Amino acid sequence: MTATTQQALPVASGRETAREVWRLSRGHRLRLAAVAGLGIVSAAVDLIGPVAAGFLVDRVQTGTAGLGTVLTVATTMAVAAVLGAAGTAATIVLATRAYHAILAALREQLVARALTLPQHRVERAGTGDLISRSSDDVTAVADAAPAVIPVVTVTAFTIVVSLGGLAALEWPYAAAFAVVLPVYVLAMRWYLRTGPPVYRAERAAMSARAQQILESQRGYATVLGFGLTEQRHRAVMAASWGVAVQSLRARTVQSMLNARLNVGECLSLAAVLVVGFVLIEGGTSTVGAATTAMLLVLRLLGPVNQLLFVIDTLQSALASLSRMIGVATIPADAAAGPSPAGAAAGPSPAPGAGTSVRLHEVAFSYDDGPLVLDAVTLDIGSGERVAVVGASGAGKTTLATVIAGIHPPDAGTVARPERTAVITQEVHVFAGSLRDNLTLAAPDATDREIEDAMETTGSAGLFDLLPDGLDSVVGAGGHPLTDAQAQQLALARLLLADPDLAILDEATAEAGSAHAGLLDRATDAALAGRTGLVIAHRLSQAAACDRIVVMEHGRITEEGTHDELLSAHGIYARLWEAWDSRRGSA
Ligand SMILES: Nc1ncnc2c1ncn2[C@@H]1O[C@H](COP(=O)(O)OP(=O)(O)OP(=O)(O)O)[C@@H](O)[C@H]1O
Image 1: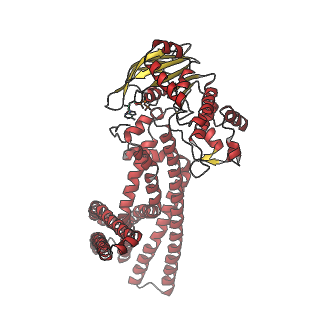
Image 2 (image 1 turned 90 degrees about the horizontal axis):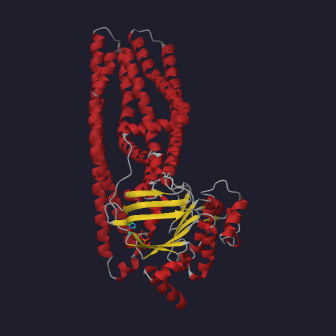
Image 3 (image 1 turned 180 degrees about the vertical axis):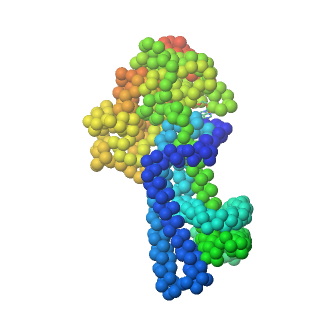
């Protein structure tokens, strides 16, 4: 396979991400409303402490505070603190549950889309991109939850309610705090620019040190044998010093962030103090109210600072989220395509009565490469079985994928039945039960039907090997299947899917000669009663077809029955002669 130009899969914009998250939250809106309600109430309960403290200051100032007042205020503050903490904890639990439920829905949508993406789309983006979105990105979003949810939830409600509280006291208090917000914004921007590369360098230095230590341990005998102890010692020392330097840089960045946060803190407290002084002087505020305002600002600072510390985790989780949503929201029609050995292909123009497949002047090339299919015109009648033969690289597989709808043609038209199934060269056994593997494309199939399909395709013998019958686990981590068994399963799967057109791309090519006859019979049974296109390297298979199409350099150069092509003494006759003599001497 030649290299293809990479065209990354889409990444959702901020607005698209928000819209999709809102849509996915449909079943969880009640829970989200509870999060909002509980969060606001808890943050409001947290206001009681500062307000009570301000009240006490005013009473002390006016000389009207006795022991009873102090005890009442202290009890109120303690109860409010406990209730506020309990409410906050419940809010975080509810928010975490909603977060994971929405993430699970998104993950399901992502997997569903990924499985139906056209192969050419995945190939152009590189399979790694899709795999990383459905694994690394999902992990990044899930792992961010414990760090991000408590901080974001608490911060959001605390900021809203505390600013409201400040404004309710006297609006200049809220304005004084808002004026220093730019300091925090600047600190955040600096940190996002400076922090991530420094942390990355620290992690890289740690990996390098681990590598040096591991190598020294693994090659211990060699180190001793060649007297390399001193040299290894120096290498580990150098790597450890690298970690020390990078860790120092990372801690310096954190200290510098702390310094910026301290500046913000000082400025905000000073601003509120000055405003309080002016208001008290003007007679529009009391010392108690100024105390409440100071305590509210202090309460605000904690969550705001914490938010800055998780902002990079939050940012990378959001980046991962937009990559996941980018794939999950690819329109369904763009994602449609036949799944291996089973699902129906997308709509195609009707080929006409009595004809199952009609290709007219089809051209195709992979990205900007040379033409792989060149003006291919081919009709396959309903129920007809056609074999495609030709040298390696002639374009046989490409023809099969274009007919199947996996690759859209660059020019010309392709008409195929709506129910088309393909067995590709690489038959995959999914990790799961035998039943799951067989009913992928026919979820309603009964055990009786499954067993009949296995019997017909000669794979019923598997039952002797698998003690749990259809419930036996096969594939990765389960019972391993040989290539021939995997192909028999794929043929049984095809029988259950019961498509109008079956495309077998070298479905028996993997077979060793001992299994060849068995697989030929299985293929024959699977194709009975439907239109078949067989990409055949074993010419005995081609000879059994109604018609043979010979391809050379992306073009159809010969066409006819086995006997007609032999009499024509063309390329097929030569291929047959060579193959037959090889078979004879084997
Ligand atoms: N995904 C791809 N990207 C780029 N070029 C490709 C891709 N797949 C196949 N090709 C190229 O297209 C040409 C036709 O390949 P194709 O696999 O269709 O031939 P084939 O006749 O089926 O060969 P074989 O019998 O070896 O499978 C070859 O030159 C091949 O290198």
